[in-house]
Figure 1: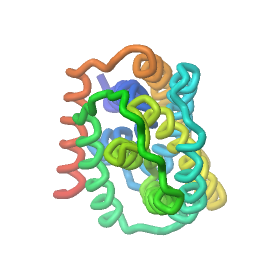
Figure 2 (figure 1 turned 180 degrees about the vertical axis):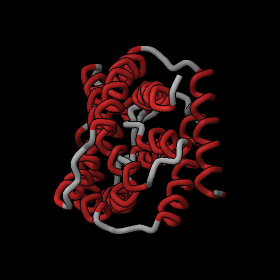
Figure 3 (figure 1 turned 30 degrees about the vertical axis):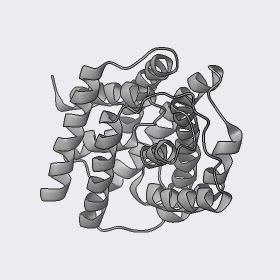
Length: 243
């Protein structure tokens, strides 16, 4: 089995697992590409393209199951979308990009392994200024690194008790989509055009995202695969931070 096939299969699995918790999977795709030594420029643009389709397919599954809340979504998106556009235009050295991405992968590992208990307790109202501030910071970072930001937003929503578990998944999925559109639009203004390799990766990510969104909205995740994904992210983190 050649390297390209392994990458495509890995991307499909990553898309499935991330979509099952309402994420686009950018941190996972970036981890896969980092392990195989992909250049940062291609990593960033490819992750945003893959995010678009996986996050939207995941969002639609959670939305159809009645888990989305517009009032809890818009304060974050209002500030994050323009900041993601700005962030995508900020040049980063290869070294700094890898370091920042490594930190985000550590957060991703924690989110994957953390399984918050579902509760029927009422959620806490989201303060407008707090929502805007959180959205702005995550949007800027997501644009700079080529992630959608859901891997950062979802723990905030849960820790602050601003949304329930599946509400969080639905909000994060659309949040990732709009940030990815914003970041990618900035790259397009700079002349970016997806290549054939990225389109192959997209096909596997799209199928994995559809299946993962269905599993997450109506069923549950397979723990063994979650641990395997966490291990993969850990290996990628070591590669990014120490090589």
